[in-house]
Length: 178
Image (cartoon, helix red, strand yellow):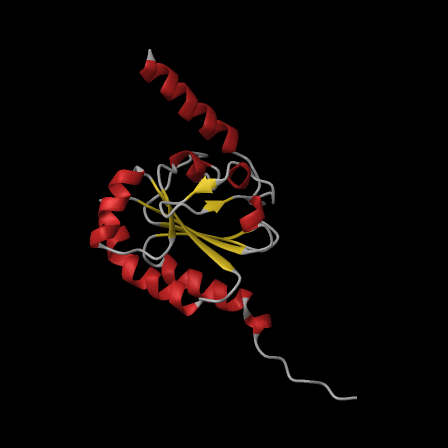
């Protein structure tokens, strides 16, 4: 009976996401539900509104996910001090992630057991199915719109390029004298 209810819940979530626009509302349920990272930081609307948010879907036994962690850490360093939040949405529970991070540091804020949150951001394939490959990279702009959705390790460079574009106005502007 639990299996049937679980299956129904997953199907309901999947169907409710089909046909939704790429616009991610500023007050989306992930922001309202206040995600808590492994480090204890809370991420809700107060922490995410008006910021660029980079999401990475991963899990601890995913070979491509593990391979890209050093490059993702470099990405965090490259954009340190900018108005961007890096969140790693993991399928694993907190205990498994804590054990993993002791051996392999990952500088994103890691949200454990985040499978349900991932459903909010998935894009349907050509047949309307909600599936994702791991890793998946998503960038959400300051207005709450999903502006990048890329799967696989190639997503790192796509994220870097998008962040450079988003922060191009942050460069020092020349003073204009009257």
